[in-house]
Length: 250
Ligand code: URA
Image 1 (spheres, helix red, strand yellow):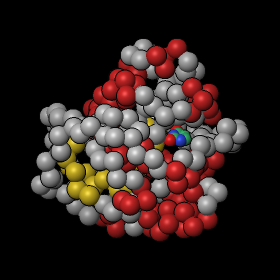
Image 2 (cartoon, helix red, strand yellow; image 1 turned 135 degrees about the vertical axis):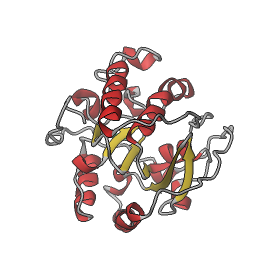
Image 3 (cartoon, rainbow, N blue to C red; image 1 turned 180 degrees about the horizontal axis):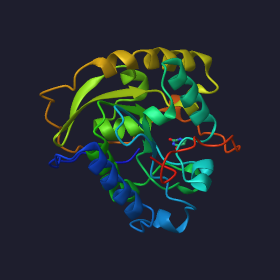
């Protein structure tokens, strides 16, 4: 687990959805040639994220795996297929939501992201949240949950518990859930994930939380072993990513 956390402060510009989408494309173009950390030397493709640039619901995973690195799209492996299935069960498709990761490049061998990589990448996620302005951010699994909550509490403890949070000027409900890769081979975890998913429509129907609690200051986090969540996604190729509308992304 990294010893740094993402927390940020900024002023949200008042932009129309079309303007926000154009700005998101600019961030995408910038990220796609990023060389801020050493992952630029080992990645095949920057995996910026994909989906609806005006989504109410955003998913944030850990980092791209081998399939994502090849295809340039997030969650295109087995875990992504499960994510799509669970979305379908609540009447949504990938085109309704925005899916991305804390890191935009694959760490070699799917190792945990290093603190300097998180620090180099966090501005992309900050700008994604700022421009997409989701009502709910679902963190998938331990890594994204600890990072975005700024707290070492593990996913087993905090899953399914929405919290109002301020991301700079933007208020969201942060909603941690198990990582679909972890649920792939553990039926009980899958049922928990399904039950947490089932609450999403109600959360999305709530108004944006205001006023949101002030963001906590960055904290130093000690590594906390979370063996129950340490399930790497298999590298096996999986059927095609969603046909994304424009830019192949959003
Ligand atoms: N696991 C993640 O956390 N992100 C992906 O994009 C794929 C697998």
